[in-house]
Image (cartoon, rainbow, N blue to C red; front, side, top):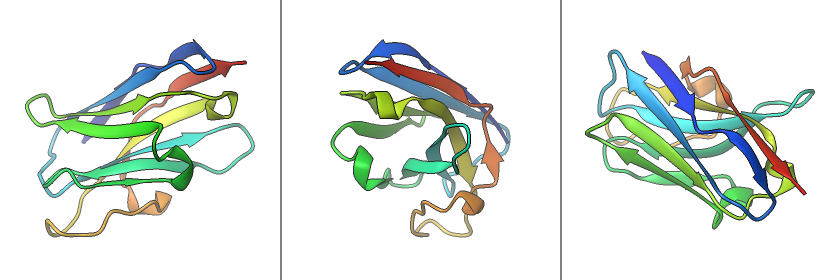
Length: 127
């Protein structure tokens, strides 16, 4: 499975960005897709996840209401819409894929649960 993330860039505080992650290879409807972010010197941080089977979503508390994750079945793409961005949102954003054994596995924020990772796309929010 290959994941290709794009959409990062420079935006002013209060602005919006939309990140996309295209999945290719042996994906399935049992996959979970997640977005994480990381700044130098800190651990990778969970942002949001979506269950491919039914579109169920899960967000980090600090992202609720500002970020929205969605999927496009036809394009095999997951999108992260980020609104009201803050300077603290500046980070390298990664998409990740987690194959699961069944359709009803609970979404997780655990980094180690995700097997496949994209290359990261940089988001910079200026004050």
